[in-house]
Length: 197
Picture 1 (cartoon, helix red, strand yellow):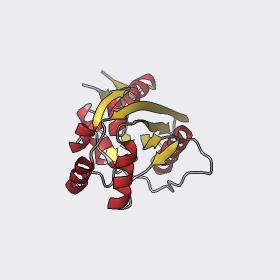
Picture 2 (tube, rainbow, N blue to C red):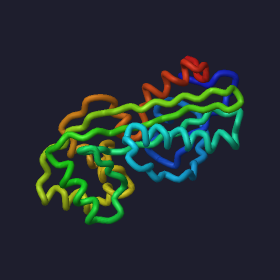
Picture 3 (cartoon, rainbow, N blue to C red):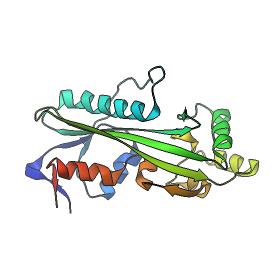
Picture 4 (cartoon, helix red, strand yellow):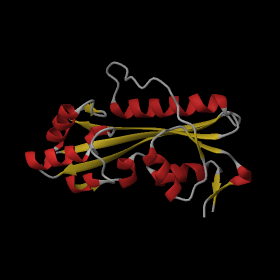
């Protein structure tokens, strides 16, 4: 089992239940302290840069209050035709997103940052996964909307839930699409000496 060296404190700076679940499944012990930073994108900011900057801001926000801890910040976006699809505001917007993704390939970018202020350590990475949707009929879209799952999800779907039936194939990290590239995060924590086997 992976464990923190010398009882090092690990904090996830996210309220996402999916990120929490992924790290728990990997056997990590950590605290959850959600960040409240502004998540607005800057003008003409590339999606890959946006998620990385936001991950850094979230980790920095919590690390300022807990300088001895190693803090993980993350942010995920769905991108199609260079357009970011965030969380749908209502049913109509979720329907439009699913219709736009239907039969198409899109990319999921997750930026993650790991910060420890006491040790002056700060690293950040963006991981990208390509996802291909099956062609969805209007009936399938309406049925999926009625499940309630598309709401509070970037791109209006959850690959780890009922939305798994929407996805024909992926190229890259599955956990990245869920919300956190676990392999890359753990590799980074081991490289920094935070975790050991």
